[in-house]
Image (cartoon, rainbow, N blue to C red; front, side):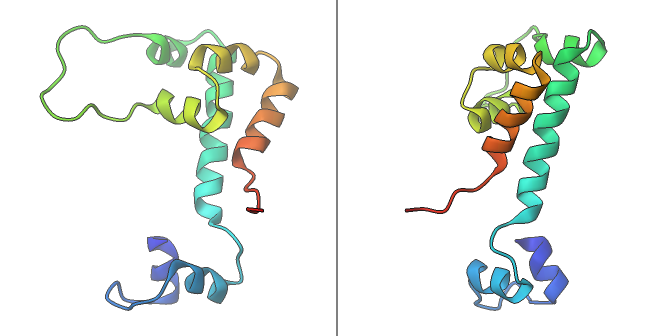
Length: 114
């Protein structure tokens, strides 16, 4: 929404709802977030299908102790939240391109509330 406000030159102090901003742009949903989700899921499928350094980094674990603060959100947590599968199940599903594409499409398409 910050990007949309910058495009319309609306200051952050202006009291405009997100719905009003989307209406001014003639959009129903937040396209930027949808595109980011879609690209991230597609890249996950690409990495999992190939044996390379990226896959090794994705599946690997770092030794040692973590810091005292709240645990950081992991890249794989987004994948499992958006798809509704565990990362292991998503990587198995990614081997089937057509099945994974349909899962990505379902995860990134917004459904109207009843």
